[in-house]
Length: 88
Image (cartoon, rainbow, N blue to C red; front, top):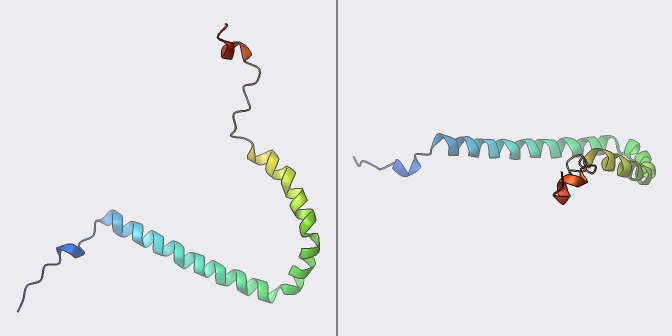
């Protein structure tokens, strides 16, 4: 009987957890894609009515995105010009 070295198959727990998490994301993504496909096939009559509203929904999304997505640009300190000039 031969003794085999299995040390190359030893995987640290962090790497095994990362691989499992990556595999889980792929499985969830595949499930979500199949669910979206099934919903699209079953509800295509409802979706055809939505396509007429799509340009208006995109135009409505523009000001909403502008309102909610400009929070992190640092626009809050416009009134403190004396600090930026070096005067106090």
